[in-house]
Length: 295
Image (tube, rainbow, N blue to C red; front, side):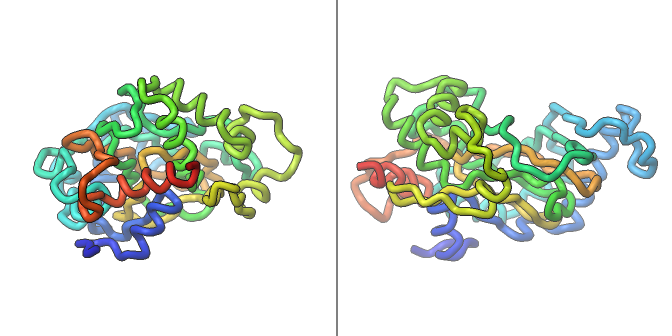
């Protein structure tokens, strides 16, 4: 299959692992201009870019969405084309619309005084605003655009790659649909690795970084589970499966981390029973493959 931006290898990674990084989805200078826009919003809260003494809160959550000129420049054709490489041509609902960018968990030094570790709390997949079916169009992809450089242990999002397989099976088993909370709870209790990761099962006593990040869990159904830490440069975007579990991490570097969470809704529900193989999107194929592993 021909893709506009992503390579075959990148699409395969998305389907298997639940995420792929699109480097320089938009220009670094535009990312930094958007970051300055957020600094101006922070200044309204008494937090000044050039005065670290005002950085008193470990994390400041700006629960707002923006569509200023700075952000419009970040909505590049390359970004849109990469989204459509995964969800299908002309299936992205906001392709020709004004896009809102938010919310903003600006991480100054959350967990900065704690040892680096894999948290047991905060793990989730997105979608608190809708009822969940296996073909729901509301999320599309989880897009995580970066507006600052994020280095290891610098507060990058933690991704539990492979967990989209677990969620897909749970949603298939509940065709009546589930609330977001129900879907999360059933998913974490459906798999021992995910249950221990999220604190839903007793800890084994092993070092969590070693167990969940340095080691790969090979599931008997034929998929792998592992925690990875998102890093990148301003203008990079993480394109993630809508079912993948993720969580915040500690910012040991104490360099302010700027990113947001963008949904990419679809025009209509996914079709997991198309007449022609070539009409499936990689997103739809990934879900079909998740379910086939449990068959």
